[in-house]
Amino acid sequence: MEQLIVTTASPEETSELAEKLGTLLGPGDVLTLEGDLGAGKTTFTKGLAKGLDVKRVVNSPTFTIIKEYKGRLPFYHMDVYRLEDSDEDLGFEEYFEGEGVTVVEWAQFIDDRLPDDRLNIEIRRTGDEKRELKFQPAGERFITICKELGK
Ligand code: ADP
Ligand code: MG
Image: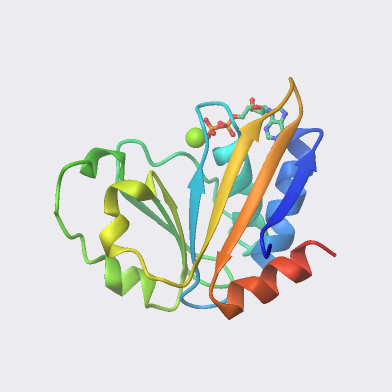
């Protein structure tokens, strides 16, 4: 299996793992992020942003579908929950194929519009402070990134 599973024992560990991933990412990389409420999606995203040298505070984009941040690369944080059963196109391709890194929450709602090459990440709560993070790479580039992340 090419998937990578990492267990963390604190929010800081999750954040550090995400930060490491952030340093490995490049233009046009797309990540999807799944997990129940309180799993650690926002914690992970904040760490990722740190790895991309984003200085501004990153919060959940609940009321805006897409939030943009400046970092080493542009960073786009999307929450497409409100697009369930909608085929509205907010110009996704320009984000996915652009110079930035995109993280999509509730990506299943725009399944048909996601690029084939992407990194799917699932976070599962396995204890008070324990989380299991499953990284499923699609495409050679993300397979390589996952190998590096697991080192
Ligand atoms: P989500 O965005 O998925 O709803 P958050 O990141 O907002 O989740 O919240 C996760 C909560 O779980 C935070 O209060 C965080 O401190 C806590 N937590 C405890 N252990 C961990 C861990 N190992 N990784 C991430 N978060 C953790
Ligand atoms: Mg959140």
